[in-house]
Amino acid sequence: MSEVESKCRDIRLILSDVDGVLTDGTIGYDNQGVEAKPFHARDGQGIKLWQYAGYHFGLVTGRSSQIVLTRAADLGISIVRQGVSNKFAAVREILEQMHLTFDQVCFIGDDLPDLLPIRHSALGVAVADAVQEVMDEADYVTQLRGGRGAVRETIELILKHQKRWPDIVRCYSG
Image (tube, rainbow, N blue to C red; front, side):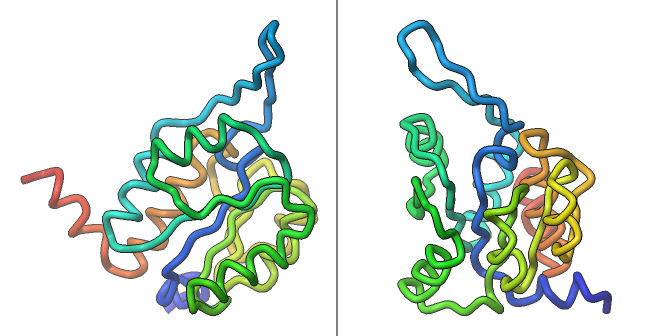
């Protein structure tokens, strides 16, 4: 059994940064100052598949925006922490509230504020275009970039190592 496969075995919760992970990191504003962020549909479908498998998904982000709340609601994500200056403390708080341990969490990030959650999680994941320090700390670096399917890739990786992926595929293949 590989080290990554072993780390995936007990994952019950995936926590993810938003900007640079669920998006490509681009932040746009319209003429009224309303923020817009592009999200990848396959990441959203992956989150729904993860939830269908009976697990939880949450967002921990340093910025605050209505678009994150809208996307979270669209995907049925109830764990949303915005405006977080200390992501490690926020992750600890979430785990305490859910009665989980770091051995049961995967954290996906791309930049320096994500270092401690990645270091302490059972499976720390860096997206392919993360800063080097985050990639160096991660247990797994995705092939895909942030906002381009990296979250879906991570979800499939975990579900496949947990031997849950064939059941998910069967739901769609009849």
